Image (tube, rainbow, N blue to C red; front, side, top):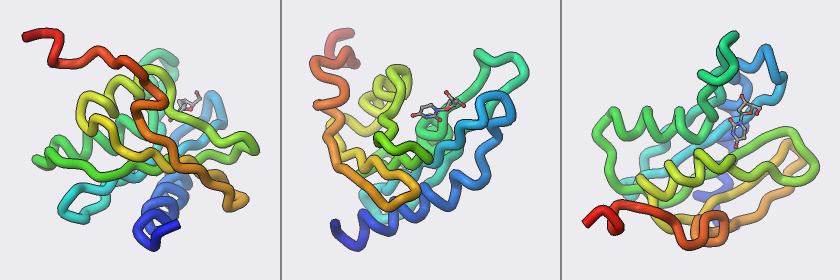
Length: 132
Ligand code: THU
């Protein structure tokens, strides 16, 4: 794994500690690298009204987009599971919307990792091209 991949996984691992997940107790961290090399992180933030929960991946993307970022290189997602946790269906759609076919680094706390592409996670995606 490249040093930059390792750095992104570490950032996702660190921000996972800030997860607000008192209902599920399932803590997730995500880190998104822009094409200019900046890293934006996010953790899951839950609500007592469960459906309002926002996943770590979307928090990272909302933070980056709201700071004016438009071009993304790679995203890392970390959870404490033996089988590596992939992004949920909603997040796959949002990652595709803002990042298209980027590599997604999945990691856990034992140091396992795997790199998959968004097009493997969301084949035949619906996106803006169909709205033309
Ligand atoms: N969650 C994420 O933050 N990202 C994922 O990829 C999967 C699920 C969160 C949402 C919720 O707070 C908790 O994990 C359990 O579903």
